[in-house]
Image 1 (cartoon, one colour):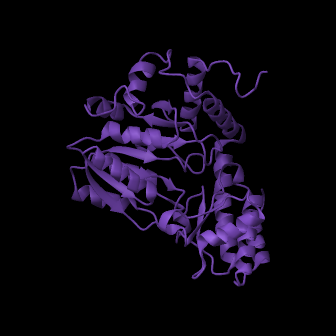
Image 2 (cartoon, rainbow, N blue to C red):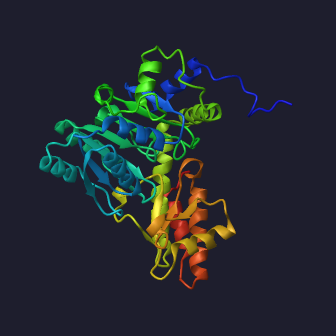
Length: 368
C-alpha cells in the first residue's frame, strides 16, 4: 500500500538547488547558500569549527544561552575568546561592540545572536555589522529566531556567516537549516587546516563537492521530507509576502506586551525596553512568589495548544515565554494566551483585569 509521506520520488539535485535559490531570495543575498541536513545547531557549529582555530581571537557576544554555547565551541577550537556579556533582559549596543573591538584589535571573528527566543531580546545587527566591518573581523550571525520575524539583510549588514532555521517565524520544519557564506568566509575556512573536512560539520564539503561542481551531484541523500517542508514554508512566506509576515510578528509582540501590562496581577515584560524585545516571542517575568513553571502548567491545563512555556534552566521559576511565531502570530492566539495566564494568576489569588488585557490587545492590533 502506498503512503504519501513515504513513497516519494527522490529529491533531485535540481530541486535541491531550486530550494537554495528560494532561501537566498528570502535573505536578499548574493552569497552562497548552503542547506544543511539537520537543525540549526549543525551549521552554527560548522561555522565556528570552520572559522576558529588556535591563534584566532573571537569576540563572543552573550545575550542569552546560545551565546554561551558559541563561546564553548570557540574555546574548544583553540581560539582565544573574549565574552561580551550583557543582562538577558536587555540588548547589546553597537557602542559596546565597538569598545570591545578597540580594546582588542587582534579580534578576527565576532559571533552574535540576532534574536534570542529563549530570553525575548533582539540585537541591532545593522549597526553592529557596521562596526565589525570597519574593524575587519569575520561576522557570524545566528538568525534562527529572527528570520521572517524582523528584517534580516546579511549582505547589506556585512554578515559573513548567517545561519537560519525554518521552525520559528517561517512556520516550517526543525530538521533542516541553512547558512549564507560570504567569499571572505570561504577563504578563511579554506585556509584553516582544522576546519572540518569529509565531515557532516563541513561547509567546505558543500563548497567543493556541490557548489564548485555546479550543483549537479548532492553529497548524500537529502532529508527529503524536511526539504519538501522547507520548500513549502518558503512558498507560504512568499505567498503572504515577507513584509506581511514580519508585520504580523511585530503586531503579535506589541499586542502581547501591551496586554500583559494591562492584565496586571504582577506580570511584567522580562525585556525592559520595547525596542529591545524580539518580535518572535515575548518573555514575561512572573510575579514575586509565583513559580513561572507552575503558572504555565496551570494555564496549559485549560488549553494545551497555547504557545506558552516557562523559561529554561535557572529562568524556569521566573520567566514565561509566549512563543507567538509562525502560525501562532495571530491576535486570537495572543488573546487566548493572556486569558489563560490571567485565569491562572486569578486562581493563585492575584487580581487581574481580563477585559483590560483584551482591550489592550485589540487596540494594539486592531486590523488583523
